Amino acid sequence: MNPVDALERLRRDAAPLAAAFAEAGFPLYAVGGSVRDALLGMEPSGDDYDIDFTTSARPDDIARLMTPLCGALWEQGRSFGTLGGVVKDGHYKAEITTFRSEEYVDHSRKPTVSFGDSLDVDLSRRDFTINAMAFDVIEGALHDPFGGISDLTARRLRMPHDPERLFSDDPLRMLRAARFAARFHLEIDPTIVSAAIALAERLSIVSPERIQTELNLLMVTETPSEGLAFIVNTGLAEYFLPELPGLALEQDPIHHHKDVLAHTLAVVDKASPRLTLRLAALFHDVGKPRTRAFTASGVTFHHHEVVGARMTRKRMEALKYSQTLVDDVSTLVDLHLRFHTYKMGWSDSAVRRYVRDAGELLEDLNELTRCDCTTRNARKAAMLATRMDELERRIEELRAAEDMSKMRPALDGNDVMTILGVSPGRVIGEALAFLMEIRLNEGEIDREDATQRLLAWWAEQPRT
Image (cartoon, rainbow, N blue to C red):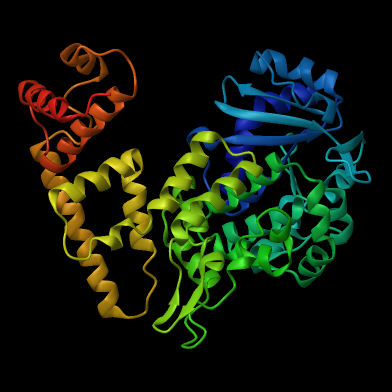
């Protein structure tokens, strides 16, 4: 879609709101991402379709004008001048905010807000020039007081005013710079780099939840490495992800192999943009600095996957990730070398154990293993790819022969208690573990066979 058509669609979709605000005597401007993306010719789709607006109307007036068009409103941001809702006829999410300015005071984690009456003042407090453009959906005019269009054309990331002032007002903008640079492949203006270096410590006043959200958005861009490099080089990572700059060490100083950080960034970029997988790629080698040892045969990183999984869990918990995501990413880090332990071939038992341990993360684990190969040695890369192809083929063969979706013993705990005539206790877990070993080593067996083998096992157990 060309930019003219994209802006026209934006105005058409906003028409009901525009009419309501115009009739009440208020201006209404689309701002931020919807304008930027329209100028890039990007067409909104599905659940991602949302439009941010700004106006001189105060929250009470905004609510009065939005309610007939949206029904129920989201009012969590009312104290900041923001109300939101789904426009019934337009099928998009709208958020409308009163012209404002905001800043952080001292060491507060929350900004103070004041309302205003000037569009240009409102735009001046926005993070970057490419987001500081407004499209008048009533009159159809574009406002670009800070040169956002020329910066989009030049693929340049600048700020509408002094970066130190804007970063000081909201330190999270330093991480947003990383995200936008990565998402749109923008060259970051030197003044932004200098300001981020000078104010990196101020990131410590931002809540972990807001930092996590920004990091997540960065991690699912096309090339997160562009933003991650900025975060490391400016010192920002030290305040929320210190493990990342800690990876800047050579894997083998004697032969000057690429450093672990460069390898990590390459793995992140190779991985598909799924958050769980990308975070696992980011953390997969964080245990290397703590486990690096120099031996007669070279540099080793024994058990770095185990150490890295613990470090991953601790860091993700500090960033307030959900327990499910913490568990999944930590598991991938812990298992990312499992593939390499089967150098002599994959027995059926080994394949079953691999699938069982990976569980629902199998696809991500296989992709992480492939992405972890960043060698320039074509022969070695081809050999690793062939071995992974073989493993995936073996998994599919076993899946065709038996149910591997949820591997479990042929009997459950209630069956064990009934057959052995025992009460709940440690012996139940031991019996199920015995039956699970049979499942992993031999595949599926029927209940009758499982019962006989359980009784034989029970007969051999010492009685106390």
